[in-house]
Length: 354
Image (cartoon, rainbow, N blue to C red; front, side, top):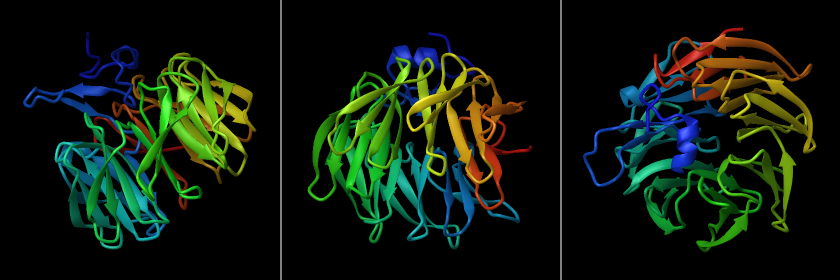
């Protein structure tokens, strides 16, 4: 199967059953594990504690720290970091480095690594429960979920099955694990480590977001998303464009946005009803909202473009070249309203100029 720019196309990944966000880069086989470098949706995060952005820099084994003003700081972490998460209550940033099989803990007040926690296997997805100060890390090619105690940095493992995305529901004290090749979610009760299965309504899941008592999951092989009632576990189906992937919720407007990979559109849902479908650059795969500015940023890495949508008028206002960055994620600095794309090449990030 041919590689596109050294990476598999999304169509190829669907049929391969990988369905990792964006694409995957083949590496020389040196261990019995498949040698694939995965592109992660959680490649950037914002720290409310410090007002800084944190972006993984896989090529340089580091994290780029972008303050509101001043020079960018580069913090060395493990090998080829691909994801991170922030605990705003403690001021800690957790960085996943799959090739080092560990998580680096950064003190956001100093931008220094204060601990390194082994995961034992190839770490991938990450999420933080700020209320309990626990960090959840999935491990590719493994059924174990690593749980890190944020107070002590001690790690333990739970056998939960493979997970490609993690969502923490602090309100209900539950953790939800999504597997791309499944038609169910795994619901974890952190209090006792027990798990149960919840139907998502269709096979091949991708995006996952929560709004109130509803969990939304995109169905990549269909043209809809599943809306799961977290009390009854019943599933409603909401129509979208073809091959919906990334999801984003704008709670201030009671809206949700769906990137539809196959037909190059974004569906705008208001109270779960489709109210607009906008044509964007082909193969959109990542979304970021600037709620105060009423902007939605859409990244299309294969096309090397970023589309900007005005959410007030529900119109596309810009579609620009990413200048070879092939962005697979976007992050917004709320205080300055600056948006940054996370690149696959040409440096770890690029500021989006409007």
